[in-house]
Length: 101
Image (cartoon, rainbow, N blue to C red; front, top):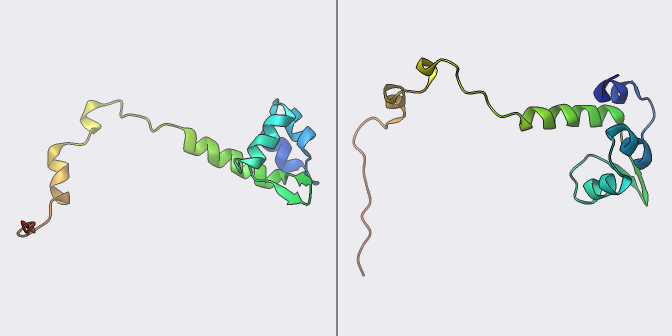
């Protein structure tokens, strides 16, 4: 079963040990991520818990952000200089000159 599916099916919050086992990392790694705010966590005093649904959403979002954009396989799909013409301002360009002291 996938990690995301396991997290989504989980009704009660996970503790540090359970999440470390699920992600196959050390508990100290989970605690470091919490301390650096690199992973969503719920803190109540000294107790740290993790909501399964929130973690599943976070993992999906992190995965989507980590993917590098694919380059077009067809060289004709690349941006051409003509395509940049619409970015050029219309009308005269006014440049301010710096006053010399």
